[in-house]
Structure formats: structure tokens, C-alpha cells
Amino acid sequence: MNILELIQKNEGYQIPDEYYTLSTEEMENRVRAIKERLGDQLFIPGHHYQKEEVVQFSDSTGDSLQLAQVAAQNKKAKYIVFCGVHFMAETADILTDEEQIVILPDMRAGCSMADMADHHQTDRAWKILQEKFGDTILPLTYVNSTAAIKAFVGRNNGSTVTSSNAKKVVEWAFTQKERILFLPDQHLGRNTAFDLGVPLDQMAIWNPITDSLEYEGDEKDIKVILWKGHCSVHENFTVKNIENVRKNHTDMQIIVHPECSREVVAASDDNGSTKYIIDQIEAAPPGSKWAIGTEMNLVQRIIKNHPDKEIISLNPYMCPCLTMNRIDLPHLLWSLENIEKGTIDNIIKVEKSIAIDAIKALDKMLLLA
Image (cartoon, rainbow, N blue to C red; front, side, top):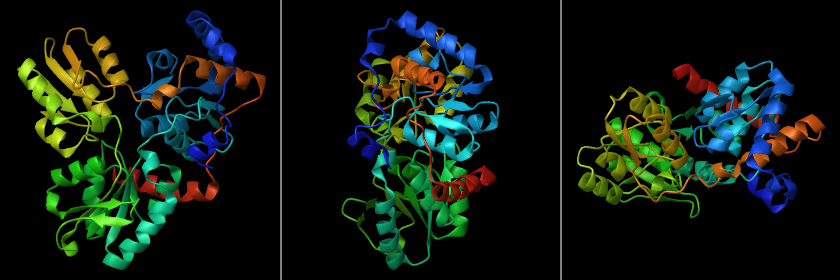
């Protein structure tokens, strides 16, 4: 059952109203007490984009795959309360031991990008593309995708990618096949392929709604097929935002995530993964000035952690990731108290057949990276 079906059935995400009547101080004290009582049995990974009220209780913070790997390495923890979004918790379940339980505090915490590709769509697309191009395509998927999409890629000998290792994996893919199908984020795929020397006029878009290629030219020239998906946060950074920073902050460096559009990445001074952005700011000298194009919770945390630098969001009107923000302090407390009561809700469990194929795609990437 996918995240949309869960929500439609009104299952597994409602918490008692009383949690919203508690003071912040009381909730924080109760969370701390549960963490102390459960000890090593509990592990809380927190994604960089989470609210500060949640991140403060994380045992580890990082990107999605990094957190899943850290969870998998933590053999002592029976309960992994993943403060992120659905696909991240799925990856954690795939990589952790069978007896470990992965919990998502709010099942509504999905990812709009991941939801832009489902296995029904990929099965239809693959059939059409195979008929059109033959056995010349290797599928790749961003780790920001559902377990079912990772499994589709694994079954077809492809690999997952992260924003940190995408170039290395795409380079490898072109040694295997003439073309690649890149899911589900068209912008990361386009920016990565362009940086590796693939011209934009050799990139097509696959529209999963119309089951058709969007391309002007001779289709035999296509080298990259980009799934028509995007991050709803990063697509909202614009060239106009960059022009405003250039005009009002002439000495400010602009760094963005490669999930931004090609035009935004091209107009920026630098781009890279979440970790890359964090590392660049940390290594920058005091007094340096930065405009950052990524999720607002993270930007605000970077600003707080680096008072010696002048840092702003590239888009001052940007909202935090709405689905990430589903995980809040009341949901975290509710999840932890349910563990102690023995009435655990929101367990994330990936079907074994899907997990086996998804691991193939993940392992391929880890071997390459």
C-alpha cells in the first residue's frame, strides 16, 4: 500500500488531539525521558530538512541514504523512528535487520518528487521505450524515489544515485548502454549529464501522464531520457532570484542544490548536494557572504550555526518543505509513547520481493561510489 492509499483510507497518521494541548516544554521533557528509558533500543535519524524542534532529538542528522546506512549499522536499536519522509524510511527498512522496526511518526510525510513516478508508470514507459530504442537504455533512479522504483531499476540492472555521486554513476551507466533513463528528478539528471558533456539537445523528457517523449529532433540522437518529475522546493528557485541577489548583494556567492533547474544552476556560482553545501559554508572564511538555494529549515540552521558569515536564502519567500514539516514534536512524542505502550503505529515495511530488487540498485551504486 502506498502513502496516498494510506491517507485515503484515513489510517495510521492521526494522533490524539491532546498532544496539541501540551506545552513545548512538557513534550520535550517527555521525549527526553523516553529516550533515556529506551536507551540503545531507540535510534532517531533526522534529515537535514527537519524542523529544529525535531532535529534536537536526533541521534544522527544527514541526507536520506546516509541516515539509512547509519541506522543499518546500529544493530543495538530495535526501534528506528525515522524523522524524514516515506521513501527514506523505506530505504532504512530495506537496509536494516529483519527484527528492527522502522517507524515514520506521520504517514503523511511523503515526497512530491518520489510520488511523481510509480511502478505502473515505469512499467508502461519501459515497454514503450524498449520498443522504440531496443536494448540500449539503462535506468537510473535518484534515491529520492519509492522502494518500488528502486526495485524496477534493480530488476533492469540499473543503479540508484545520490546528488553527491550522480556524476560517477552516470559515467558508469554510459559505459554499459548507449542511453540512460533518469528517474524521477529531471533537473538532477539534466544538470549531471550536462556537466559530463551531454548536450541539452540530446536530452528528452518522458511524460508519464501522456506516456510519450517530449523531444524536438531525430529520436536516434537521444542520449538521456529524463523523467518528468521535480522537487517542489528546489524548482521554486528562479533566475530572477539570482538577479536580485546580484543586484542587491554584489559580493555574495550563490550556491544551489542540483535539484534546481538548469538555468538556475548555470547562473549560480556553485552547486552541490546538501552535504556539499554544508561543507562549503563550514570551510568558508569568516565574513564571507552566501545566498543558498535549498530547503529553508536547513538554510535557517546554517545561518544559526555560522553567525560569523552573512547568509541568506536565495529566495527569501521560500517556505520549508511542507511534507518534511509533517514530522513535528507532537508526532515524535506520540510515536515514542506508543513504543513504550506496545501499540506501535506507522511501521514501514517493504515487501521482501521489492526489497530484494531495490537492494540490487543500491548495492550497484555503493560498489561504484
